[in-house]
Length: 483
Image (cartoon, rainbow, N blue to C red):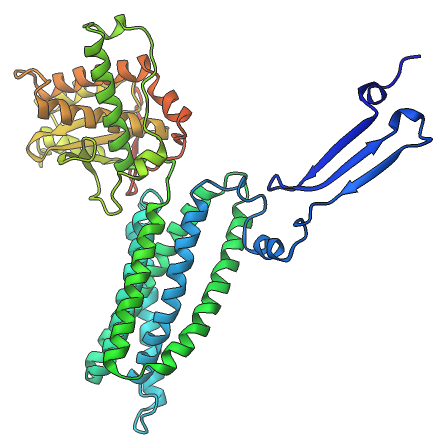
């Protein structure tokens, strides 16, 4: 009769039990299992620090499974984020005191009704600003979440400064100032809320977004509580204007400084416009070096080789927090052009020629040139034209265009701009010819060197769109048979 696998294995079996953080919480040692149960035993060994008080406290504020359930940049960001929240809580108490002085607390001539109406005016202005700001910049908040995370705190700190200025102004001016302060706080709320959601989605790696947000709220709560307790002591000892402004400026400097360090610590995995500039220009330079080092002219004759693509961590060290929207830069250098993705088709047609006012149509050379452009991009998910006088690339997206199509269009525009700058284009080439030659080269490079595959291998998320910063349009191409 054959023995069971357990009896064949050994006389002693050790079983480790781990938690979501991969920490050993218990070890079970079973011995004498091959004696038919006559002298078998199971010992349980529990590490000393498993149920320790410090660990229990940390588990209340860190996501389950930390550090394996979040990205590697989570802890550094949270440390700086906690420091900025602490300083902001104290500064907020100073500005709140100034607002109370401004509305007349302690003044026997102040009217409660006037204070209430001022509060209503502030709320109204703030809510209107929230709607307008969300409508105007809603699309760009996710692609540029690092920029708007820092911008939110600049808005908030500016509001605190205005609050502290309000008691020194006449009542009429004070109302305007406090209303503007409310608008800035509303802008802060929209920018901070949206950017925080994007950053949380970046940190969560195991589908634990909800739990991560809950733990983040716990962190903010305890930090704000500590800030209020310390702030109460600070405010009670600061009464003069000089001391108030000195403390406020110092706290706001710490607030913005730690916020800057916090967003710098984040290595986003999505390719927005700036990160695409840094990554793709590096790829093209390495391809160019490869072509010349192999001393081979045709691209197709070079054997398939991988090109080292910069990682999100490497790119985060180079990217600017504030960047002009739509600029094309080669490896972070000077601006070499501009690109607009998701423009409407009429924008390109108007470059070929103005609409005929009487017939309401484009005709002649305009329609012929446009027909050539359509034919050039018939197999692509986009159509692009270069407005030479303004050095601007206009990209019209076709219906169903995926995020990788946006990257492809941006890659084409970036290479065209650099090739034009360094003189790689033939002098007599028309814009249409240059578009055709550069598109062909970019397509060969991306296929031959497996650029998109390499991006994914190096940690980039090319399936999440982050190139469009404004709500754009799409076109559908339909063949209509004549009568």
